Image (tube, rainbow, N blue to C red; front, side):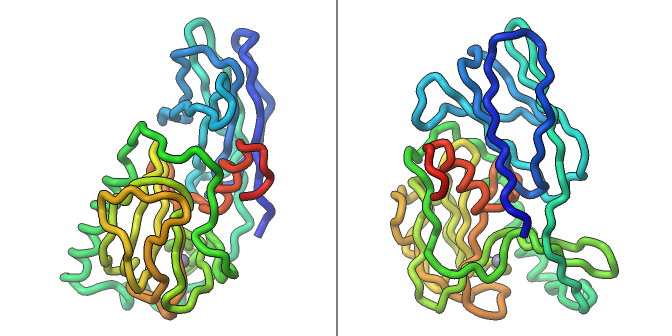
Length: 281
Ligand SMILES: [Zn+2]
């Protein structure tokens, strides 16, 4: 794995239109950009997408954005536009291709496809999840740095490409932690449980809304200790690890969705935690 791309710049609003030097970010990762003394009513856009301006967790007059770069983004120059009452600023972003590992799928995808009934189920589960991930709850539930869902060896990192006949079929959408069946799985921060159910691929799944478009996902659990609607605090037990769903062995698959974009979960948590002035969380 390539080392984390840490994009942390500070924009000071003292000029009019200005183009800032290009910064690099890797596909599948999230950039954190902090703003000092940004005028009220400022708007940040990336392509056609509005990016929410968020209150800095510890500094009152500072705000920041989390900019998720989709895994399937094409590398190249992109622009972030900050518009405010009497001007705008442009930040050039250079999206780089991540140095992700690649696995070749040898079985034809059609051979591993679910049957008609299962396909109907997975399609409904996908729609249900997507409608959750695209819901932007403006309330922030967390006020301290994030932790990991368990302390264990990572057996499969985010982003490994699954290639069939030379083309990208899918990619590993989360981080796998080694875990025997029955290992406690903890909430990485405060939030509200928005999904807790058995699903075809992910098995027993818990999804926690941390507010402001940030969701954490915990899959393949042998047991769930929470239900939809529960308020959870950081480190609360969400369930026990297991091997439910389509898996070959027990482990915890931990994932994050930010504004509906699947991102490298541990890289994002490190980035958010850096706002607290701590190098690691
Ligand atoms: Zn996984």
